[in-house]
Structures are given as C-alpha cells and as structure tokens.
Image (cartoon, rainbow, N blue to C red; front, side, top):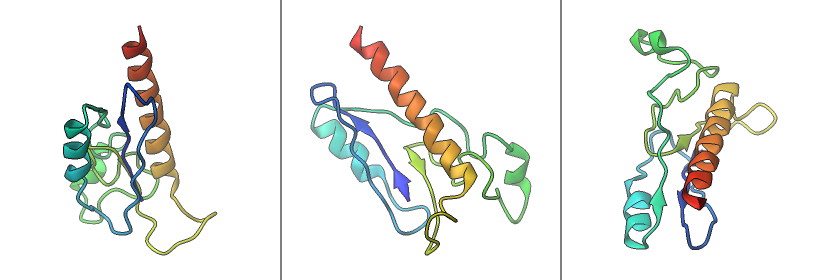
Length: 112
C-alpha cells in the first residue's frame, strides 16, 4: 500500500493512494498536486532509515524497518495479499506514523 499525501492548503485534506504492487509509480500524484496548486509533502527520510545497514544485504530491509521500500515521495507499504492483522508490517506502520507527524508539522508551519 502506498500512502501519498498531497496537502491542499485551500482544502486542508490529504489525498490517499493505495497501490497493490511494490514500487508503484507515484510521480503522477506529485504532478497532479502541482497542477492544482497543492503542496506535496515527501517523506523527508532516507531508505531504511531505522536500519541503514540492511540496504547492503541481498535480502534488503526486513518488515520491521522504517521506509523499507525506500520511498521519497510518500509513505509506502507492501503487504502483498496478506490481510490484517498480519499486515501491514511494523516498519510500514512506523513509516506511516512518522509521515503523518511530518505532514502535521508542515501543516502547522504553513498555518502560521
């Protein structure tokens, strides 16, 4: 699941995008946000921010790693066909929470 939040200052509501496959293209959302005068908030973190050494492994980051899919555009999660409560994995939940805090912080700064 990819969660991307272009924030519209005029509307004050996020736009949510869910993707079924890992690494789905999100640039269209950024372009759409720009075309409509929105401010797009990226993740602001590097891939595998909580365990950067996992990027050197052939297995890559595990499910406990924050931003394991390496998105800069927005929070992403890959749960494949796994249903809750087994999905999304803990690292993806942490990524979403951190992204929500980032969006809230930027929103508060813009509201001043």
